[in-house]
Length: 211
Image (tube, rainbow, N blue to C red; front, top):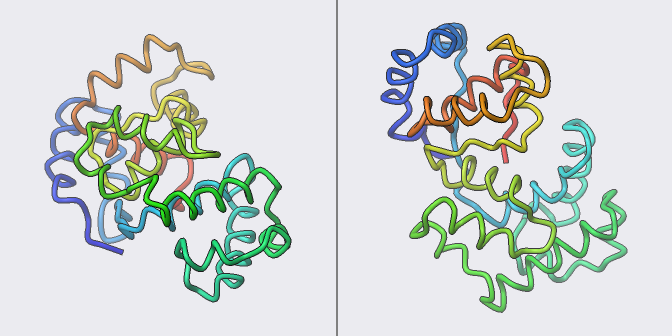
C-alpha cells in the first residue's frame, strides 16, 4: 500500500470549515485510530477485486477473492489469470459472467487493447467512460477504481448504496435522500468529494473496504 494522498490533510481542513457534520465525522475518526485512503497502485488487481465483489456481501467477496488469490498462487496479474481455465475460475465461487469479465480483462491488457497507464492523464469523466468499456465494469466500479487505485480527490459515487445510506443517516434525510440534496452536497464538498465519501462511509461501517 502507498502512503496517504498528499491532499488528505488539506481536504479535512476544507471540509471541516465547510460543514458541521463533516467536521464532527472527521474529529470522530481522527488518529491514532484513523484509517485513511491508501492505494496498491495496481489497477488489474483492483479491477479483479471489483468484479469479484459485485452484487455479493463483503464477507462473501473476501472469501471468493482469497480462493481466487490462491488459484493465482498469489500472483494476480494478466498473464497468470489468462492461463486459468473457466472451470478453475468457477471453482473459486465466481459466476459465469464474472469469469468472462476477468478473462476478458486479462486478455485486453495483454493485447494492449486496454492500457491502464492512459488513465492518469484523463479527466475523471473520461476515465470513467474508458474503464466502463471493460466487460463487467460499470460506472460504480469505475468510480471505485478512481477513488481507491488512483486516489482521485473528487469522486462522488451517487450509485453507491453505502454513501446514500450515510447521507440519510448524517443529514437527517429519508432513504433514499433526494437527488437534489445529493447534488447540493456534491457541490458543497467539491473538490474533495472522495474524502467526504470516505468519512461518510466510516459513519456506517468503521471497517474500511479496499479495492
